[in-house]
Length: 258
Picture 1 (tube, rainbow, N blue to C red):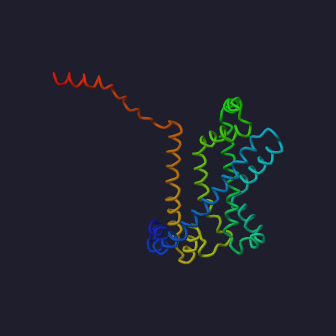
Picture 2: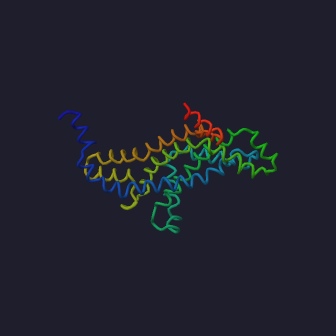
Picture 3: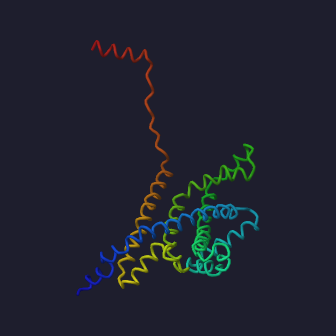
């Protein structure tokens, strides 16, 4: 048997893929989306205050934000998930019971907050200082000027980077399997891994990777669309102004005589 045939049978066996596709669709995709969407929402809510604190002039706000960002960006995601999922397991048992899912979302949210906060910080700092000064001159307080003028502009500028990080978060959700999920909680990667272990064939794991592609490739194109829209702005089509009635009547009479 040639190496190519062995490769095809090991990684692209349709029978193995067909046996796993039902679990991937009904269990893996929803769980992966829940993990990614929940973590992205919580990470965004935590990342915005981190970004504002990171741009503050006072050290007692700026330094804790920088330390948090450096720690959670520097640690491998798997280590953070294990620290949160295993280290806080007793507290998780008291709050949520034996379900490890919420602790996995907490861990992913803390990681996402560090990355989102840095993205938002760069966006806020890219806004011209004159925007803040103009808002203050109009009577806005410092906090109101930041909240209503500077932060919305900064967030708008970094939306493509935010979507890129969301793509990474979708893929990082596969690391939750370290916490020992039940059959109904498995994400795409865990289902593919279980099927590969049961059959001795890696095709189901390859199929799980294809499902990740189906989730992330549209987001990649969304990044390009958003980036292009932000660079060029919305195209406004101007309608021709209506001609006066007297001019229209004259034009009609001229056409009739002709």
